[in-house]
Length: 140
Image (cartoon, rainbow, N blue to C red; front, side, top):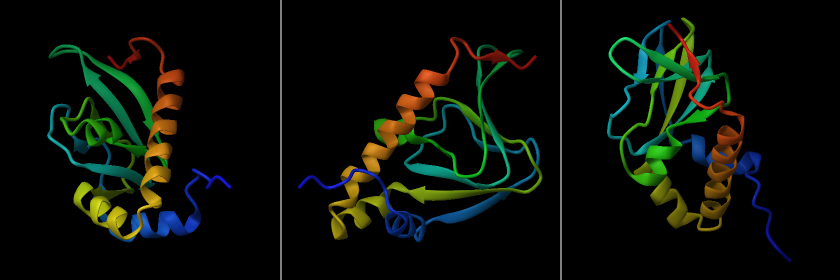
């Protein structure tokens, strides 16, 4: 019998129990494009927008995130730098930060959790790619 690849409530409890919460006001930068990252972020409260900088004068809005949405998954998977800037869009934004080293330890203790988690990340990426319009929306 094949095990489900869907993250359960218990899975999320394990994952989020190691998270740190950071708080942001409107227009505060959560992560800068190009920042080296090894973590996943989840919007716990409020809203954020994901933008890229095509040049020094223009930014392109790629997506707006609300509570429950994750970001940082591309740099987490690739082990590289942030591919976009994430900016808080509300005064009450709370962001959960899940460090990569915590996930590595968690997956050592719960090895069946790892494939469900990475399946979830792949699903998020697939949806994001399917929904994203070419070039995004110009914010300026």
